Image (cartoon, rainbow, N blue to C red; front, side, top):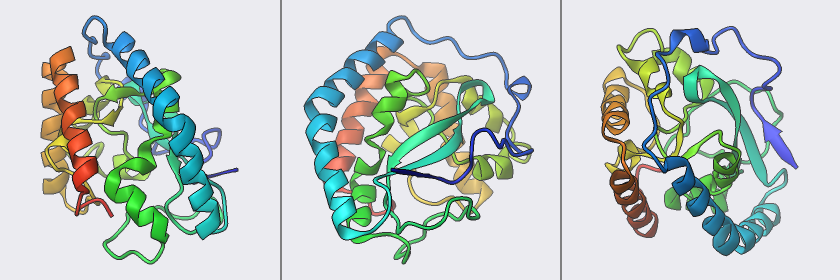
Length: 223
């Protein structure tokens, strides 16, 4: 069972158009192979059993679907269905977009743990296998959040020249949590554009290691 905030076939008027994004940034040789190898290993050795355990915990602690599916912006401004483990109490699809706050009463007990450890993002391995995402790249934002900055923050659309990532340089540098100011988003954008410029196999390995360290430490800004 899944829930969904924005139906992809009911494309809102504010979804960014691909014509408003510069040509896609070239990927380094072997990036897609790197994605498939990492995603395949994670699926076999982690998602196959941990995903089942997390799913059982979600169903045991709150009613509703195991997966939360939200339409987000992908490469070249194209929307796609982004998978996550559900971390909030289930509500009717189609509700207005609201960022998660500290001590948010919508977050379930197991949901708080999943968010702090980034395990709620684990189902996005499936998005990587489908070619909609990469292991490393700018994180895909919910469409209403994109709408708030697309035309007001210079260079914002350029982050979607790259395939969105399961993790990214901004997240490895601690840029997590809700975004309520233009300054906060500009910091994330700086890292996203730097990653697109410096993307390489070495950089991807570095970001993956930093992400794993953040998972083990937990992240106080991930709520």
